[in-house]
Image 1 (cartoon, one colour):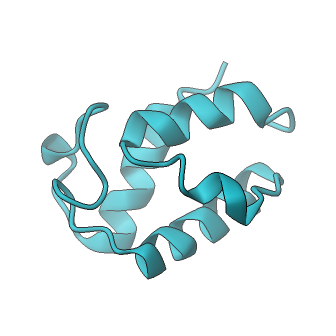
Image 2 (spheres, one colour; image 1 turned 180 degrees about the horizontal axis):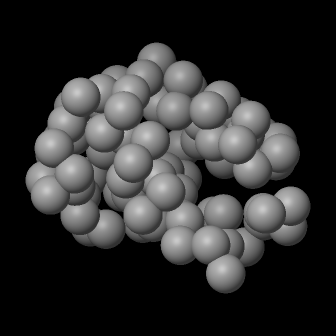
Image 3 (tube, helix red, strand yellow; image 1 turned 180 degrees about the vertical axis):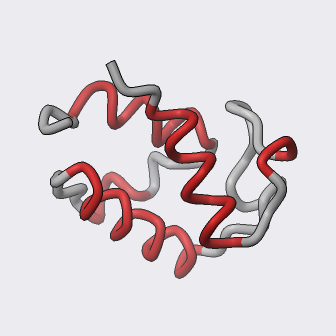
Amino acid sequence: MIDYLEEIKKMIVQQFGLEEDTIEEESFLETDLNVTEFDLEDLIAQIEDKYEIEIPPEDYIKFKQVADIANYLYEHATNV
């Protein structure tokens, strides 16, 4: 089984230049990691490409913490 949390952390490190040890499961995207709405859209596009999944825009607002994205993938990603 894929560890989505670790994969998301790696994507955030690559995309935003943050240190991996500063990214926790409970990290808030906006306040802790300074991920803006536009940054989140880019991250989601990268996730969609990697996992061959389509995430509806109305689900974006559910992603407040890193864990929210990982949990979404555990529930919705089937093509691993």
